Image 1 (cartoon, rainbow, N blue to C red):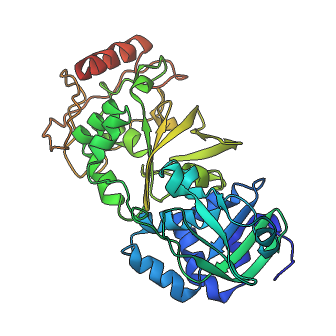
Image 2 (image 1 turned 120 degrees about the vertical axis):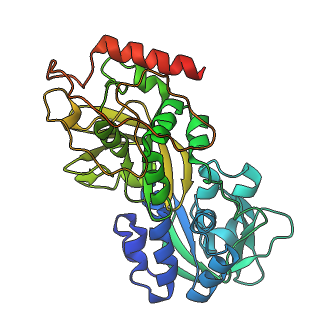
Amino acid sequence: MAASPVRGRNITAILDGYKEYKLYNQYLSETKVCDEINSRQSTSMTILVLSKDAMTTLAKDAGDSLPAIKNALRLHSVLDYYDRKKVKKYGDESAATLYQATGDAASSTGNVKVVDQDDKNYGFSAATPGARICTVTKEVETHPFKFAILEVTAPIEFDGLFDTPSTANLTRLLERAGCKVFAALAAKSGVLKTYEAAMDTGLTLFAPNDDAFLAKDAPDVKSMSSANLTKLLQYHALPAYNTKTSLKFLKGSIRTLATGKDAVTVVAKGDDVALDTGKSKSRVADTVVDSVPFCLLTVDSLLVPPELYVGAPEAAPLPSPAEAPSPHATETVDAPSVPADHAADHKTKKASSAVASRPIGAFAAAAAACSVVLASLL
């Protein structure tokens, strides 16, 4: 039993010192569960780790699905402190876990049971009736009433633990999240296919809600060139998997899917996370889907690249997986439930110069255009 300092509770750094937990530690990093653990510095926690063989069994049981493995790792992250002395003193009880805290599980199944066994043994099990007890074989590190790492004999599992949300229809996910305008623009411009292509390798998508397009300083997406519209939509995505929690650990500028020098900076304070474009900030509101390696988050306002503000040079045409709509089209934007390809005219004109301190498009034009868009969706 180690008695070294917690070292700022960096779980991956701690487990780096134990070769037998290398695979477990690797999955903590890939799923970003390590960030969820590290973000709870003031919370007493007990991490139930698995040896290589036990972790291999868990991955096999989960069908090698990272979203399913993430569920299990969250279940093995207990939101209270336990060691042999405490269990022998207080006996059996129920404890909350990160899996329960995410809101993905019912309160009854999101808990684990702490079980006082014969002699000096104790263990943990799922909260479901008849669940097997996974005995603690080693107290790897204990820092009384603050943080503990315990090795258990086998993974804690129950029916339904490995169920994960479907991400097959991105358009429908966006619509249900209140981002119909964004979904429609992505489908018509062809950028939706860029998102979908990146979902299997790593994508964080920041979807602005429909009200964001009605803001007085929102750009007039109806008058944008296809190149600028593509850049705007690609600016709302990162080419890597990040959760709202893990964003807080990112330092410096973060590259987006947009080409050039486009980047955003994370501004975090407590549980609040915002994205700074250099011109404005947008709050990261809710997590719609967290399915490794894809995360869909909503934001309160549009993320506008600095070069899309009036006075910046017009962007050169960008390659797109599908044809983009004419920038002067007058039809309203529909949000289909299933993405479809759309052919459109590519002839564009340069936008007239305007006040350099605000995004492309006049305030009145932006509000009017977006009103028409939303009216067609209601």
